[in-house]
Image (cartoon, rainbow, N blue to C red; front, side, top):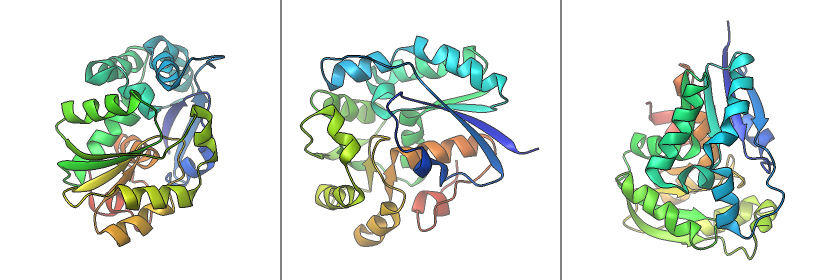
Length: 239
């Protein structure tokens, strides 16, 4: 029997086709979405609303009912906005409603950075203040030193949907730091699958993205390996 995993994405997730590139044909992946946030004041308001544990109850039950052995909440800021304790509650909520293995993008990113041996991290992100500072605080509380925090320079939350691979490549290169052991590209809305090996070759260090880390951790949870040629995390690191 093939392994079966479940993904709960935020209602505005647009990178499903790219996400599925990390999954081997032998693994069934069922994707569902949170309820929509019809209006919000700013980036912080949006991710705070999407970080409420109650949003995961019904999607988790549905995924488990369809056979998912492990469930991930695929949203970075939504899972770090309330800190380490808040992220843990999200996982506990999914576990309480049937998920045998539960993870979030933020917990997956921490696992991925540890797997590649990172201690000092440079971060590239699309967030506005103070969400960027909350990300730095989450990484710090998880044992990492953030040596650089570089924004994509977006004017509005919605601008993230127009970000292309070239934007990611240029910003990650500019956001590297000589003291960084690895770089973390935060946000599941960013295109990274093809960019990661190019960046790692150019910078000479691991580059972890939100979607990559989530796929890696979710597949590790069911004893499978993610597919991503030339990506250091997937070729050299195992949980």
